[in-house]
Length: 236
Image (cartoon, rainbow, N blue to C red; front, side, top):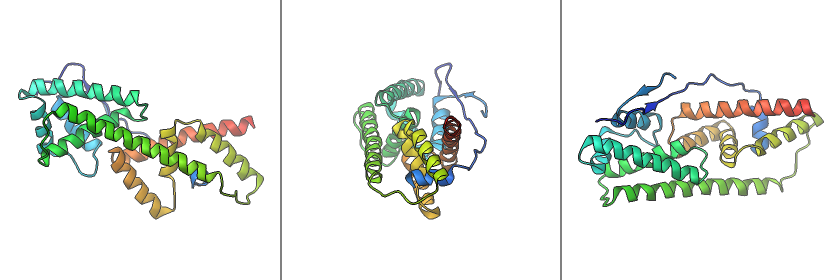
């Protein structure tokens, strides 16, 4: 299937980050190279790297493309137009990860079609799913806000002055992050070992990304926090 020119996929592998903030994050809330491909190949790549609870099958991919247009070249162009609109929608909604939400929207619709769902207006249905995902994101933000409010009423444990100072600087750094980003990193490090494993599996499914990509994102955010904390301690 033909693909509009200039479309590329880029995969970045990040080096492991440092681990020095693990305990304090708990305390705060407990290219490869770019390659141009066809829309079909690009969608398959997205479905593998941004999979939800199960990998997107070739059947699901074909069902989606067939419903977009009987001609594969036209289906590819329409797919790209819809994806651009989804990106605009999620950016307008101030989503933290618009590209991943856009791909998850298309993945969900493809799976519905492969499962025999009767959809009359596919594009309208796609944007209905996008609104649902946006609502899910908003609900996660609300849960985080509620949890933060509840934390304010929990008595602080008895700790030494250095730990108090470090926790204060870390919390200031966390509050400087966008809400979705703050929710992500706090949830990633929440709980003991078993709770963390369950949380991270759930986060991987909700965001539609594999665990390795989830870990890389957390490492990048932790490095940002470490830099912020170090600057805060030096300033203090």
